[in-house]
Length: 264
Length: 307
Image (cartoon, rainbow over all chains, first blue to last red; front, side, top):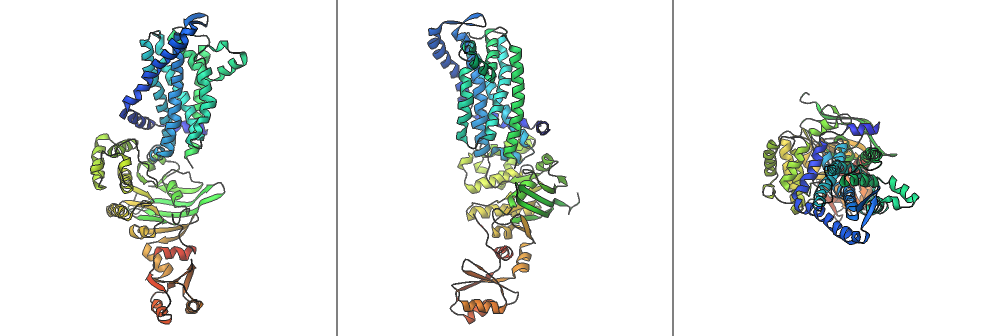
């Protein structure tokens, strides 16, 4: 009931919160655009030409692909996670705690739900912007198949929303800004490494494979990889369903926990 | 709503945090055009009341209506018509001075064109015009406060809420804020403010609600409260002897001892100050006009906890 009420309290004004964050982003857009442009270049150089030349080709879902083509969607999946998660942890925390931006917003017709939903929407947007830029760069390297590659765009929205919500949950419960180290090391970092991002998870022992399938990034990787390689990966529907459910749950929990933190 | 209708009406309002009652069953009203001040030490419950009136804090028990609307049911509608100056400056450091106003106006869905003009007017009013393009970090404490005040006026609020408007400001900056608040008052703006500065309350408020430990102890105009509760004059004595004390008791004067200082509250027309000086020529003492601080001292039996 309370969760339903919280969702109902989100109004169109939430876009004004999103717009505020966008405006700040645009005032420094040159520096903001640079990382997502350079990051894939470095990845391609280091992993593709470096490690990839040691590995050569590998077999993924019964098809032989070069390591570089295998790894490129992993880079995208990681970016989808990082950009929204970091936006809604560190950056949101700075706005909430140090700048008191949320308090200022709540002295207007905005409700707390508008503020939180707007922040999550902005985190999602950061993932989307970064993914689109990186997709362009990877396309330049000839690593994306089209038209399937365009699926990366809606996947970045879904994945962005998920990791934005998870980030917001961390912000809702963190006692201070340093404590973000904890979810990053027990949650984000293992996902970065073990979600089929840089190697196929089938080569893991069974227990580790099961763990990997629980991690949401595994499903993002799977779907993004299918898009850039240009084929329909096994279990895509299940991954999509799993991601949708986890995202909806995380969004609700984020909303409720932030409300608990801010409304006293 | 009729002219003298209550802008705020609070009935039996309680706010509890766990078992602690920050506000304990208070009733009060703010009428149109009035400047009402909640006065009391830190922790008295002033800010908690302000947070409930401005729809920040849910009410544990009781009811608050603002402009006839229940704050628990219609927070958006209530907040759309309020101008809120919070205790801590929460200006947006990511934007310039003018941009702060423009971005904030969007939260009220004000038309962008009218807002540009209004923002310029308000910057003029608050003497911030030449700072329009400055970063927030470049502003002094007084300028920040004035900008917060300008921001609170963007939506042409029906009531202004000032939570400790001059705390932490130097005297000059404080005077400038007071001037502006007086000007708004003169224009008929309804104002609800909190302060722990007695002087601020005397200077600005038509009516003062004296609070301590979550309760409203007294309610009245500053001058009325002083006259009613402590009279006109107070004699302060220090380094006093038992003899002087005995004399005061004998005279039947109301007094309060605080930090080795005796405060004697003289009844109206009593020339006690001169009498003490005459009887005890070597006694160090000070005769002064009574203030709201004395009212609080009399009523709560202790000095205001400042800071």
